[in-house]
Image 1 (tube, chains in turn purple, green):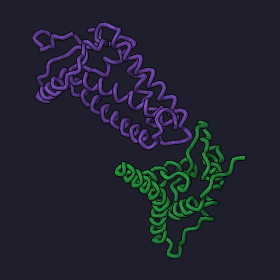
Image 2 (tube, chains in turn yellow, green; image 1 turned 90 degrees about the vertical axis):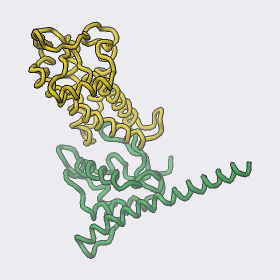
Image 3 (cartoon, chains in turn blue, cyan; image 1 turned 120 degrees about the vertical axis):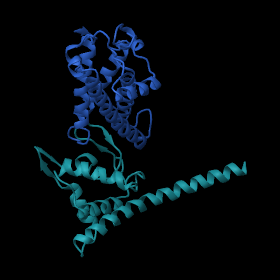
Image 4 (cartoon, chains in turn blue, brown; image 1 turned 90 degrees about the horizontal axis):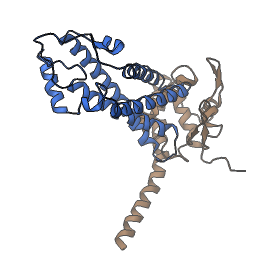
Length: 184
Length: 145
């Protein structure tokens, strides 16, 4: 087995899954408003911590090892559909794009939510802020669905369990003759 | 200079018209719900009095005993205060807050969420018609002492 995801990345990932789910589940009820708000703060802290980690860490968690490249991402998805995509040990190009979009949309969601909650602060546009918060949250959900779909597709094409890899931190070792990306 | 003043007057006129238009929009929504209610009960006419009773009625649900007024105060033209978070809520009466009851979709969303929060089920068209009819009649915030 090859060690890929450090403990911070794994704890971050599953904490974010839980915090997002809690926030999503409690979004409509005024009785659960404080739970929703606290889940939102947890999300904000997690996202900021991940961004700091991405700039300071080396290895697969580092932003430099998975660049933003939408063209490459689309090419990767096409070859994935043909079943002949190159194997990436860290994030593949499509996963990278999904992760950057989720980080940005996540920050938009928590910031707009924070401003909606503290109505009257900074920007006196409650309707606009509510609309931004709503659309950002649903866009995020769409991104999550795409992300999970990609994870499942990648797991099938490369005969590896990527969900388990995010729990244990390890992926299977690339076999001889298998096409692996030369990037880190 | 005259051009600018014309534009300013036009803008001012638009805001004045808008302020009227917003109570009118609330009335349109009340009429819409009344129309639905009439389909269920032919003799239905919206009642501000019933709307007021509904607004202030305390309902026990999951250990909470609350009414619309718990957050919005007994005067819907006043600022409210969220009973859970303590945050300020802008006035509900369209005469005071022109942004209320302008968009059917938003109003329906809020009815679905709040009715489930407070009464534990959806509100009827009759209740919604009465509710908006009452809110339209509230014109003034409580004078400050």
